Image 1 (cartoon, rainbow, N blue to C red):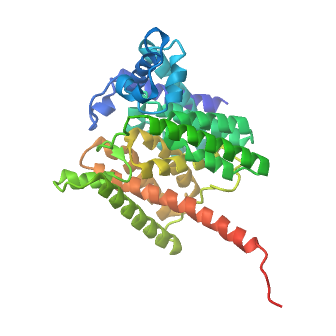
Image 2 (cartoon, rainbow, N blue to C red):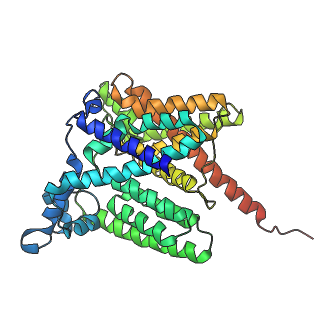
Image 3 (cartoon, helix red, strand yellow):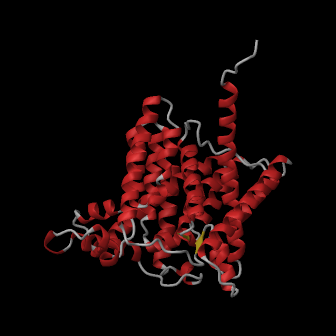
Length: 392
């Protein structure tokens, strides 16, 4: 208990020091428009706008144009019923940041039991530019991350309500977490729980789909302070080769496939050891569930493409978990540690940012291989377990 409290305090104090330094780390990075909790204040302002004049709600199709909000209508309507306004942004932001410090501090304390050096390395990653950018913006991705953590806690204790309620809320707030509901359905042991979870996932999907169809907003394309499939296509534009956004996506998909093939070859030759991410089999420990959910969400975000660097917080726990599991394999351990540093700190300088993007591509390939190889193994076992008709 004392160790947990110590690490929570250390992480919380480190976040506070970044604020007291006027976000010095971000100012020396290639980050423009440093503000104090600007994203959260903008959401609270949009919530007040959504309530409309004299209690008349703004139409769903006008939320983006009038109120500047492009995500879930449900979340904005719910937020508009609270007394929170833009003036409460500072308090709400520090409340969310405090909860984030609790989650990350507790994970550092878990790592400390296995390796002190790994715990200190985790602290360095926790204070990297993407995480500090997330805090400085007080973006709603903090809330999504906390909801995923609560859901992982519920899943590790076989509590279906505490698993589905946070994930449903997260999915209707930002749609990239929606596939996690179907993932949870796969991991249920009983048929009743599996069908119940699948039904909820379908209903939430319909709700999110109707909101996206009825909205006039467009999800913004990424910039250089971003990661995902389109990023490497942006380098073509940078060098004067103007291409269509679909070409960016196609190029990213080709690079991800090629990188995955390289990972597969190194795994076959035992040069690289990739731990399995238990996507289908039920998970017992909180750490393994959180690892699985974060890895899946990171991969979803990578494929969708429109992700600013602060969503790299989703890579933290999978990367650190893989480093912990491969400490006895020197080459793998060195590769995982070096690429984690480059992925989390590559955005601090424009010169090394392309190397950081390659490191993020490496991790996307590793996590994709880990997830799909486990799914393939489960499918093979299921097929071999089926009775075969024999000719007489």
